[in-house]
Image: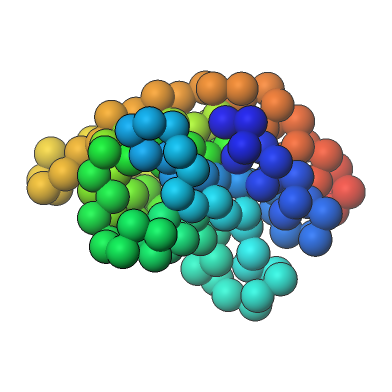
Length: 143
């Protein structure tokens, strides 16, 4: 999670919402890292999770990321939760809950929908206060 927090700080420095993510393999090696890049790239899909999943898939040479864990500072939205399911990650670990758009238990629960063919394990609240503090800092400057 500390590596994901570093990515979130990098997003904050560029004016993007400070969300960071990493994908690690079973040994804990980082295969992909990402931060929100929507503003930087003018890309609505450039969420930290998508960036990290894409990088991990390139590193691995395949789209299936079984055996991997997606670690993200904020509860994934619907798009990112769906991407985690489609990438077949074993686990999603996140920091702060997103009561407005979270799709891993808050507003929706995409990753545990029994209709889907893959359901990753979920670990929530990891360094949540640190993640929330970055978000509060960002939004305080935008309101």
